[in-house]
Image 1: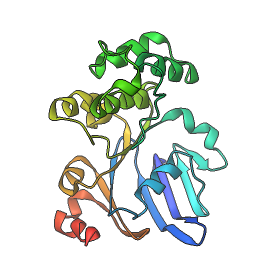
Image 2: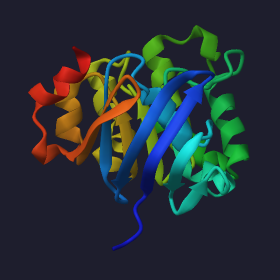
Image 3: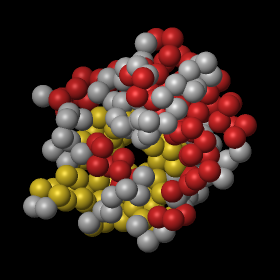
Image 4: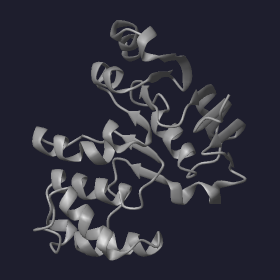
Length: 227
């Protein structure tokens, strides 16, 4: 059996005395999409932050892209793209300046910056300060930032929030199935998540309710996570 892109075994994470994740175990093959479902506070963002090497698990084992976390986090960071609620952009800089800053971090040429601005339809507003942009424009720039370095793994936390249908379609080649990346997709849209993913992880109160191929899971069962 080939090595998966993500392998978790009994992963636990606490914040003080509060257990945010408990006994989470799953495997995600390369090129597959995992939908992560659950109500607010279920542990979804905590899981993404562990996979992004931003948080350390307190128990269990975690392997991402063949690297053991947290011991080998340095092997993962440049190969992951993270798109969350915070666009991770400097407000006083322009969109172009932000992308060039990230290009330097990842040793990517500035021609790639222009490709990304074009890809998200922001070439004409590329020199506008980020603080002047709408929520939808910020999300488009954030998607350009997250995929600038052609990551192998995309971690997506409600990535289409604030986007109109035209912008959603525009970003599909970058963050959708067409990206060709392994993806972990956090979403409250159960039906859309199940359509888009190969497997789904259900979290409730930090505990794993299910981890199943989407073909074996119906939307009614998944919606019980929110009751």
